[in-house]
Length: 466
Image (cartoon, rainbow, N blue to C red; front, side):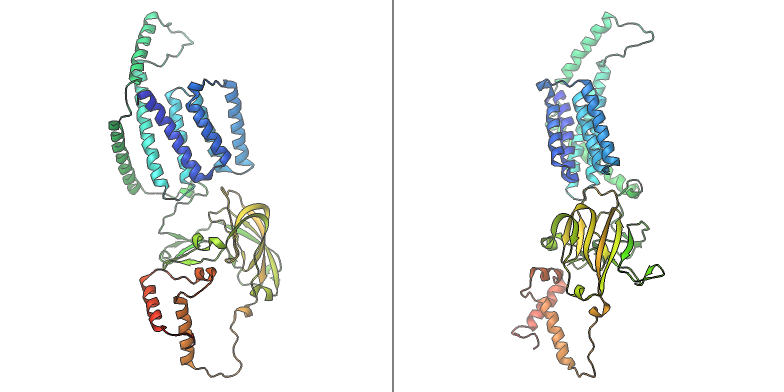
């Protein structure tokens, strides 16, 4: 591949790859993905198609793009997508109208911000190999653009600037020298560059960059990214911060840091017994969801285990099924909650929530078994206000009734009954799919030993009370 074709290849390959990664990780709209892909193809073949767009049209498109970006930023409050779509338009503008090396450098800079937007929008391990491919293309592009710029500066291919205040006009001799240098530059552009040897050296340079970058990552102290970028957290994996999380790790609670950030505001509307302006309850308990999967180290909300019980909907009013204990309550109480943006998206409410009333219909994932509602928002930047209706469950419904008078209990028989009930949980009986989720045990050697022992002890038993 010649030098000129290699220069074009790296430029458009980097643009295509950065756009593909951002489309995959940021989840752009389908219309925008298709439109930008077609625009990239037109930019690549604009020389063959001989399409000419006047400068006035580009000026109008630039003003329209800037206006739409400002509208999305301040009115719709879609900050991430406003910046992303504006950068995509600027990239198309530079690819179509740019002819200088400076324009190509700006294209590479725009692809860097696209990869940055993809990195802050995902935590997938697939981003690592995608980033390595992007670095390979970026290194090739930087090498070719440096060679092209140095050749143009050495041979004087760039036209001299016209002087408005004095200066000697160009002579015929300078014109002949420029034509001679231009022919030499054209011969350089026709030489082969993208060869297997060049790719090997480019791979060696990539390995060197990765090694140096990894070393700098270890040596240079990291800082908290959320101090500079709103909504982006970069706390250490070994740290635990006070607040809500859908994962509880019992091995990481030795270093809990308090976080004074306000995550929600609750206003009591009705149903509360107020005393001097405060509810009679000693503590207003708010719940987000119920964790359903334990792996021996942490509790978490497993989508693979409980996703089949969840329902995706887009409604303003969301109702949860009432449990048997909810029907014997003394009444209902209503609470208005203003929830700040967070990464989890769960709607909070006093236990037990039975209905949510949102201001606008939003995409949500409803789990009736866990009595939770989680919002599915692409870019959550503004607080959300809603009202939640909960039922008042009396404490007596959770107490075990005490027997009247003295009752003689056979402790041996009761101990055996208790042991057989525990063993029944260890054995794999015929349970419903929902019961298997909450009764699952972690795959641990201790669990396997107890299960084998229980299976040996209960061989031949047909009655749990035996």
